[in-house]
Figure 1 (cartoon, rainbow, N blue to C red):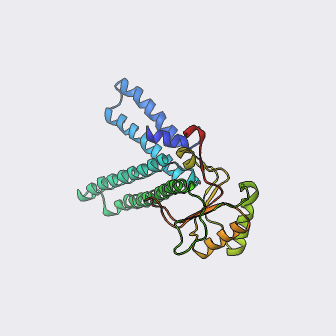
Figure 2 (figure 1 turned 180 degrees about the horizontal axis):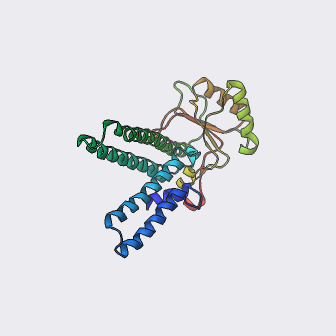
Figure 3 (figure 1 turned 60 degrees about the vertical axis):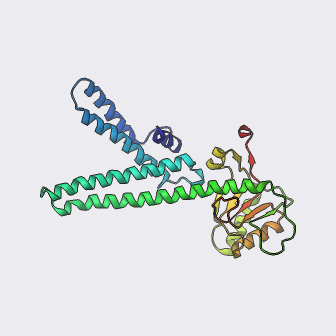
Length: 271
């Protein structure tokens, strides 16, 4: 059921053709099984084919699709990783079966090559899925870190080591439509590369966690690095509010980043 829900939230209303074909075959075989025309093993194989098609659809959408990381929910990231693990297990099982034929002298050693290639691809897919899931979990931790800092007052002049969080209240209302484009263009002109945005506006993660991230942007820059210092100086000159996070707080593990805009508020339905 978790696979079906994860695929349903990632894909259009119509199921992928491979899933439709697997379901149609399963429906046909169920009727034949009821009539005693096929074996229970054939029916089990058809059920496994549907599960595999769902896994493949989830992997294609969440790992190799164009879906941005911040549009993955925690549940989808977990389902994606589980699907990739099942794919690897299936390919390893197929390789083991082919290896038995080689050991028995029924098939040549060269017949294992496509099975070994499939296992290697499945391992790479799992590695990509796990990396995406780790990033999603870091973004979730980042949201909680921002919430932990949201109630802190703006500090006065800093003496000694820099605090974990620097807050600049600014004096201007920041909007994505009117202000963010100028920041993007200025950064690209200064550093000749795109601004590393980790979360722009309301995302699936913010929605599922109950936070309003509209007209707010998270930038994957360390505020103490040259690019981070340039960005915070630009924001202060423009009187744009921000939070600069140098490391984790309250035991949360998340990378340094800069949150542009006011704190993310709780959505009314989650209060």
